[in-house]
Length: 196
Image (cartoon, rainbow, N blue to C red; front, side, top):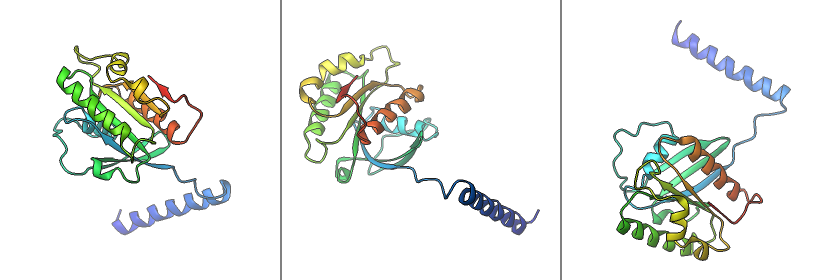
């Protein structure tokens, strides 16, 4: 079949679908809500790996991200635009903080300080936080309850909207569920202010 014929058939299918939607469904489907979210965390925490897996990309040749990275992800029925780095905080509607739950005590202390800074940052302090304790599949991983206690989240984040979840790059369903909970906070559904 020639390229012109294939293009004509494709345009006809699109036209028929559009007409069908207009006649039977009273217009085009509603647009998906879109949210701007900033993703932060220490180098090596797994930010790029998690987001690559959510996008269906391979994680075989992942290297630490340098500069700015912008990722569009569709989770369930929501579009999420994710940005990295603090200079892109402006305009964000939520925060994803990824930490390596199996890291050394020194790195965990650094992650704790960075999270405390983010929770108190003027552009982020009113936004909902999704805190992902990555690498839960490693032997040295600390459970979310241990991280909550070590990071002093109860007193520091009192009155803020936040979720702390354990995750791994091998279990994307739990990561998608965590994103769904973040979306619930972004939509201001009636959720508890804090959850682990």
